[in-house]
Length: 462
Ligand code: URA
Image 1: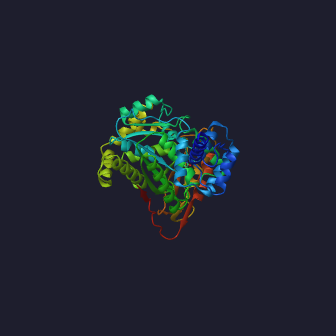
Image 2: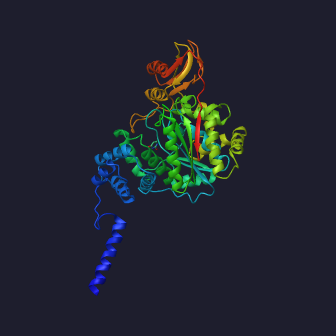
Image 3: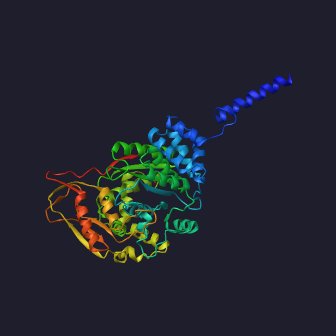
């Protein structure tokens, strides 16, 4: 009788452990098996994904195995459940920011990256001026120009390395803080992104989604607004690919319990006219003063409306846009930028007097030798011109020159006469400026027939 009971209990335990852990009771996980499973198109379990992220972060899984896994994911993909598991495993690889000490609705914004993208410098003060709290962690740029925090360092004294305490206090006091991402936030992404960069595994939707959303979820905001770039100057070269990325980003955000909206925007030419750190800050200030309109303002109004409506601060987009424009007209958005700068030890006078910002020693015009309508401006190549001038980083250790860059005078759809300036080169020495004028001309495609301005906002995924 007891023997019979013993056998029954044993069967029950085995069935339970099979259900819980898979094939065997004693299941030793090996990275090699997980790589092979994904290589053959298998679906990874939550435990396998957590094992690989934890092991790679703590160093027990080497780069060569993770490289193979990243390539297998790029080639075979991941379903939504796997992508969410990967995202959450990356969030759990480090610290998360506790924003519960901040009163009110907290919003964060992320862009998939583009040339001349100074949107955060405009959008964040515009939205904070309406009462939504902006608690934003931002990265430094690698490549054509700096990231948002590099650009903010154009303000004399600005400190992007403020403590968590100051960050929280500033959001409570001024409604806005933008700080550099700390090393202990999402360490898995730092290692994985660096590896993807050198193994040809950046353009994978599950890898991009988990990389972006893990950082955003670890940073703790209630509302996440994403600017998904589409076109030759971005990861997503086609509108369809950008749409697919936007769908996946919003789905994972919602599955993780956050209000998430993605706006798909054109990146077939640089955003706005300035490319280069201090030049972009000056252009952002001009938008906040109401002096510059066009696609840059349109983008900030669209992203800002998404935040205000999701936050319940506006009943619809039309009302939200009105509120945001009001903040520009009455100067409160610009004042919010000054408060951000002052709260992080910068000199707020530079917001009102931009001659205090870094200024290049040499300015050369890039004179066009051809005439025609601008059909295309290679955003990636304009980014390289700025990098060549010293405005971007070739390696993580490179110092950037905040004063240099390019101010474009002609955009897609404009007519160019022979002898007209395509753009002003801001450089540290004449030799570099000379070379850059030649490079900039090569970024332009001119055609004889009239060219329509491209549609800038290509879609919104709510
Ligand atoms: N931006 C990120 O943060 N990660 C990616 O993988 C791509 C863009």
